[in-house]
Image (cartoon, rainbow, N blue to C red; front, side):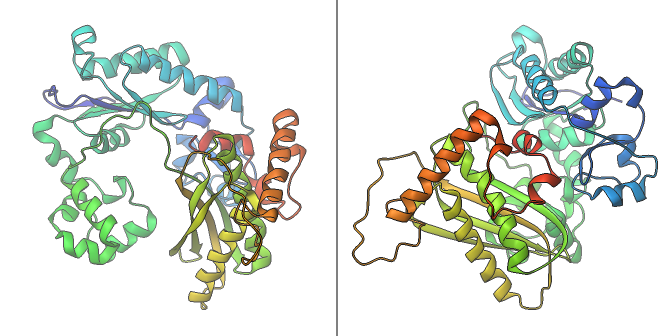
Length: 422
């Protein structure tokens, strides 16, 4: 079903295009006998679910056993990662036939500014309709598109349009459209923030807009409170960034319910650090700030960060810092006995510079600083592993200290597709 505003304003010229249930849709495209059936990509964990499976409550990241309990007829299928990449690229190429101003934010979604394309192709709503028709006809995939004056509102509109629809938000009616919607559709409102807002009696974007900025700052923190209040009034000055470079690299692992013990979390952190540090080295963008997020059994999350005196991109150094930070989180929360998720983010990225070696006179060599003897040795070992993996594949060599289960629950091919490139 297509939903459109009454009159598309020329100001509503930002598109957010999002392929629907992308990985599951590709599997149904490749295997026609799966069409219309509840399917999940994965096995031990659900990597993606079709809309038919979502109707039973099946969601990505859910353990396979739980998914089968919710949907006894669920069909699991393995992933075709090369096809995901090919079809995702092909959908973006269709969009590029209408405008060069594209900001791709993942394998299956992108923003586009079509304000300079209207003389050639017509109104933004017409362009969006043509993109959807071509993706359906040429690739056989459903795609939802939101059209609005700002990036935030265009993304929300594409969510409202799902599945397989088009929503155009006229500039004159954007607040009327926005304020009736639930707060969880906003960029940056996850389960924890949604629960905190609900406890304060805020369940719609309109209610958030009517709340004072100061009350939101007290509830959510200064930065988040200000940002969400502004977005609730559709104040979003961000432009399309066609040459966007990421300012951070991150990875996370859902653990289910595991004991909050170092024997559990350290190997997981080692595996996450390995995934992140390899990307930092490949793009020659070491980080100075390391952030960890620990989610407990009640879905409460705690975040800790550390900014280092020198940039790092060695796996062991990143894992050491992350382990130190998680120890601190657990020390500050002694009543928490169970961890459900661990995440690491590397930020404050720089360009690879000439490595200044340090004289070993006074400072202990903890292996974190790349200019020390131990730090340089760690980096050389990583570069050797990178070369082996480049030639023989990621699984050819690994750290013995990395969690053996963490790398198998979600295939690394899938992780590399889902994680943003630097």
